[in-house]
Length: 339
Image 1 (cartoon, rainbow, N blue to C red):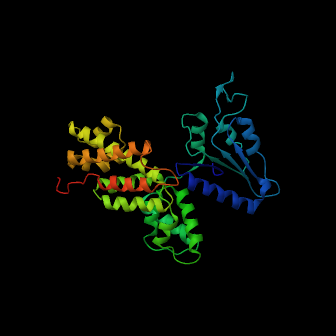
Image 2 (tube, rainbow, N blue to C red):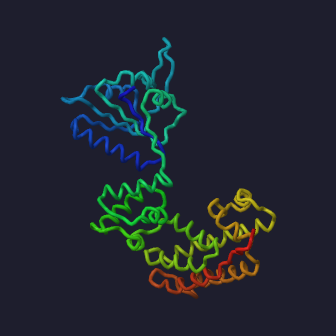
Image 3 (cartoon, rainbow, N blue to C red):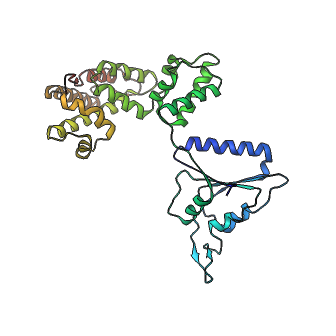
């Protein structure tokens, strides 16, 4: 059916942006009075039919937007005609009576494909699936978003943004808007990224994991200092570091018992894939003396912080920062001659 559409897919940002564009352009051409937005929650087939069968009001088109897909529970009548719970028609029967001048748009990022109404809609509608962007496609989208904002940028900026923020396009769009406003007509630079863009908590974990797993302890110290300057609290960075240390200990223990593959490590320890991948090479090569020294330092520091020997309040994080530096630098070094 040419006038029935379904927007679906896990990329909620692009999906919602396209919905906003459709509604904005429709209002401009056909007026607010010909635009209706409904919720599928509790909707009956007859209620849907009443909306989609009505002609436009002094205009060429009407647009009916339905959030999610109604779940019409079908049953057979005595005559064999399929009916809904209150005598309403099926999704198919309702949509077959859509007025030729009415456009119906369903929005369902994760439709329940087990429902009969969903199956019928998928058969009848023009489906647009919005998938998450990654790799080169995501970098091109960042470049175009900067251009749409009328902002020039250094070539390295798209990759730096992904490294700091991750692949969530909603967050990236917010950072791009902030950078464009801050630059105010000039070219966005890597210094602007350092000044304005905070790394997401997830990106913070993986970046610190990678640095420590590769034996780049001094760079890890510098990275943590950058996080603190950007507004991250020393306590949150310390918590991430403790998690990394506990993950390393678990992986070393599993590897020492003969578990070698990443999947086996994950099953034996409960450590997630990203951490297992980053830390397993280090776990295989680090010496027991190195790990013992790290554990003694970290345990002593954590006990001292919790008993008040060292200060770690929001207004006095200097001592915690010093302890963090010391523990980071004692992290085991990876044997580069392995394998």
